[in-house]
Length: 254
Image 1: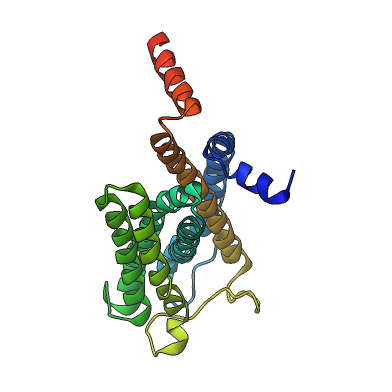
Image 2: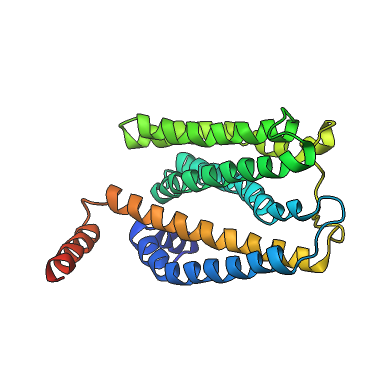
């Protein structure tokens, strides 16, 4: 069997639905375990910061949320572009499934950033380059969701959403490099792939655990939402009807 044929067979909605369903219990288990460990270390074991006191502990939620907000947008744009360019139905479905989770992480990053900014900057909000570009990211997510839901024709909606997502991806490097390109209040990166962490080992451990917890959570909720979208779009196929009939029978038996 040619390699490209195997690839497109794996991308079939029915196969994705089954695979995602099998992974969901493991992903939720990882989410709970990693988040519990990360929050415990971050809030109870990590030392108090000499400058910011205990207020800094919000970064164990803020930093992973901010990084996920940017990463998920790029992943969403990539899947949307793949569905647009190559007419891969599942890719467009996954892009739609990612958008609400990305918007949630963006809102969480802005909200926790405000709670961190009040005791450190003395204000809940400033029109800083990093904060403003992150707010624009939230509007891009909401715009994508509104656009694809406003168009009745599914294919046209997917194409319009893909165009917006691809254009909006220009904002992600602006967010990331804003603290280097402009003089901003927002501090620079504490963790870098090319340098040692600028924090205590317990702080770094808590940050990694929370980052992995957010990754697992993102996979879990995106897979759940994508499975629902797949069933909705594939409702006229035999395999989707069989699943619906099985659910109805299970409800009747209970």
